[in-house]
Image (tube, rainbow, N blue to C red; front, side, top):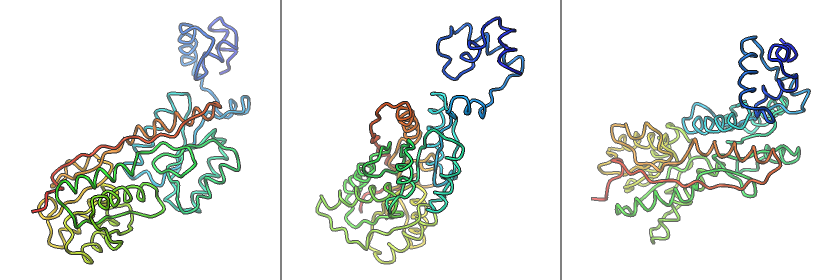
Length: 330
């Protein structure tokens, strides 16, 4: 099926058919666009993306790199980005990197081989990000989401503020012996949330020794292992802040193994406010981050860059969601 056949059936010029079937359909009346598209669908016409790329030099595709898509938070960020990308005429291709430096470069090369027009990066690293440097050298437009790097365009939550909100909540409940399940130290999310929490405690005159901060994996197992280490070193702790909700769930399990009851004699708070948090046997206090909005705004910012227009970094505002897992000191 060709554009010429559709044009003959619709009684219009081939160029009118081409514009009507384009994503933005500029320069053609809405009634003509609707009629041409209906005829094309009836005749079984499908656009050939490869041919379009060869003709225009544009693929209409954005690449998205995420550490993993089994993580609810990262999946929601991707969904927000995908929805916004489609809204401005792009399709998306997503690749999972498992936060592995070598795999990140491999996945990047695969996406660039598919002629993506820009990239949304959800797995930026603080420990010398070769992937971002590679994109800068190649002149490929990109936007960071979830994690950020100084000097690079990003759309993220204000994670320092989020950590401060968690710290303020614990201080209001009277806690002075607190620990942090800090996550990996190459992720800005973890570093900044920890910085905000510890900084708020220090500003209130509460000592916070380094031994009360434990790096960890960002999953349930990592939270369990880190909280176990904290409570073994410091059995006097009455409160734990975990850098995400999954790590907080692991910390709740470790607390029980140490004879403690979350929400009764130890306070535990997470971050992101995943739906599961409110339905746990002891509903989990958390700091809510606008996950889908982060991806949505990141995709729109990337669209601006590709169009040659400036885009500004954004810090989205987190919100405290207190529940039964945080209890006042008795």
